[in-house]
Length: 622
Ligand code: ARG
Image 1 (tube, protein in one colour):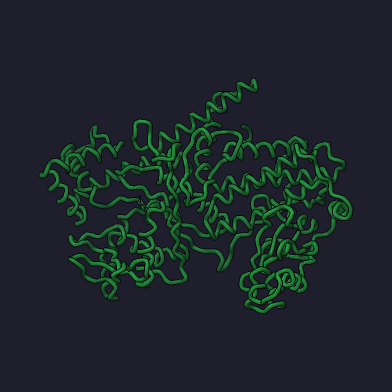
Image 2 (cartoon, rainbow, N blue to C red):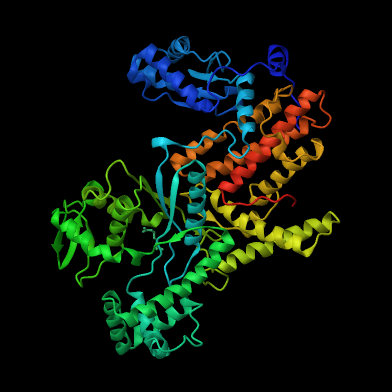
């Protein structure tokens, strides 16, 4: 254990004294408060232009205070002055004495800003006032947005692969975050339930169970449960049997023309895979509303007509296309790249459907922000359709369109993620495997501790931990990087894993319960605690805890769940240090004990909230 650093002199006196909270806003984040003060100082000292970017960030190192302002460096260049002089001039104009220590200049001209313990205590009490919100205010008025999150979106009868798993996990986490912040979120599953593959599927169904398709019989023993296999059979026929191929192509036309029999077969197929998808959503505890591609069918012709009317869509080699603007869509010869919105056979495609969906989401859903969570391979598609939608006025400028791309999942060897036999990994098998692995982890640990637990307990823990492990491993990687899937790593109890974080929660809560004489976390809620920080570790923990609203604001903007994982890891590391150095039950005084109990309660609640935002359930015991 690291030795405890005791605060000395003035710092110690201040830290213990229960000074009244300063008269600054306790609902605003420290970063927001500081930003407005720094902006004011920059404006006073160097004019409004200088204040455009205050360059205020959380400090990169512990010795640099809590936040730092790096504006002096670039400003010095512009002003032709020495950075340290510019920094001094900013400090002269800066008034933060009501919640910060005196600012200092470090290095070439960074301004270090340190929050006062009295301010920290005020904020902690604000967190304590409502442990479910922890000082995170709900967006209201114009800050509360209608957000459409388009995620998961597997394709019927095609492989639901690990990319769809990522989309489901990341999308769900973003929805949870936005919902928690008070936005009105519409969770949409843009299922690929339309397209030419249905021709083959329906034709095979017609051949194998004609009575069912005709509406006079049951499905019989045709196993649509594994639609992928059914699809492979249909595809095999399609490739070798010209008569089948022709019939399948006729089926596509019949289905699109609204033929009743074809529609019934299509519905049976979709219904079947819906059941399969739902099992997965239940396992993952993900809620999403299905609004597949077929939903937009009635709008496609009109979308194209509208594009034509506006002169945006033109005929090109029999197809109807929109030529894109911008250098990235223009080749060296100056030819602009087209997006096809109606194929030469008259059919519409993926892009047309997305255009119709955007228009619908703006006009009918009233969306103000639309997010698309898909793999990075679709970036070009979204750039294209976003541009067309803007130019056509389907999506006004004030509505934000954001592709939220993620990287590939790779095997442990860095190659394509496949089973040993080279097949695509089935999602169900993958999740089952995670549960099996966490079971052996848990059983080994129980054996080592000579602990016996009921089979029900073990089952409950491993099913939660296994799924949590998969989610956390996915979410902790920077979204756009590829990541290597490793069962062994993600079920470990030590390291940057879900089990570790779940264990951290159990531990913080346990310490609180034990030292607090069996009280539950919620008993601390609403108390006005005179926080004291005789040991440096507790002030460090406190300051990190009150960053929660800032971290969530960053996520709200950048949509990067790994930042939340990093934050939670920081909290648990600081909590461990606090726990080593700051006895709770054996604290020097009742006041210090109460302060530490409150820190435990807030820490536990912060970890629980973060895990919840990642879609992970906490356990009371592990
Ligand atoms: N079904 C598509 C796929 O599996 C993803 C759909 C994403 N959403 C959208 N609106 N294009 O690749």
